[in-house]
Image 1 (spheres, rainbow, N blue to C red):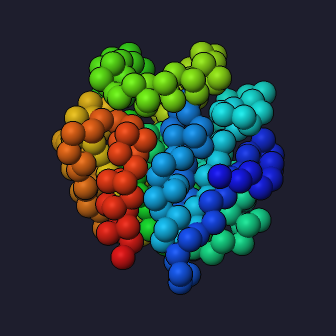
Image 2: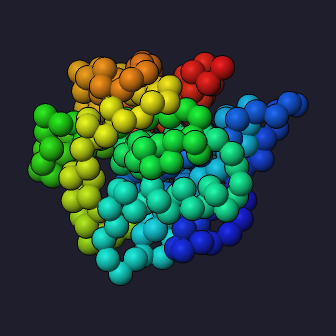
Length: 243
């Protein structure tokens, strides 16, 4: 994965396509506390069909930390500015966890920049929109993720730091995912791990029902970080949706 440029505290990474014919551009948006590293395997899988762009969003990974908290709307605007700079054309947005909120909001803000939307383990379940409830399901999930995934998450969380994580957790909690998704007119896929307690089956079904053109794909045997623990299965679901 090659870093291309830093823009307004945003670090951009590119995986060129290995496909014989031009394909879609996949833009990967990581979740709270994480970085582009969660997409290493998924980016490799998707690059067989098209080029892949991912980021370290402001305050995460190797990107500089802003002085003040950013809202979901501000993160989406930052992503859209970078997509315009790269002149990518309509892209397939793939957002994981809080990144799903960024994907929804980007599609709302600038519909013509987006072709399709994929939400992996989307948050926050409207029936438990408190930080304490989210902490409980996060701990339940983390304890049973595969060791390699646990290591990736722990390393990125430590790099993020508790203060910035908590600041952005309030932005995540306050964003009305279940309402905003109603304004996304693009074809939309929700991908979840079968045993994901954060984005459980009932929440994902309700969320897909709120979207004008939404559907759900469940990957057996995996949890919230399914795109890291099973990148091939996640890519297969995304590519089937795009094709």
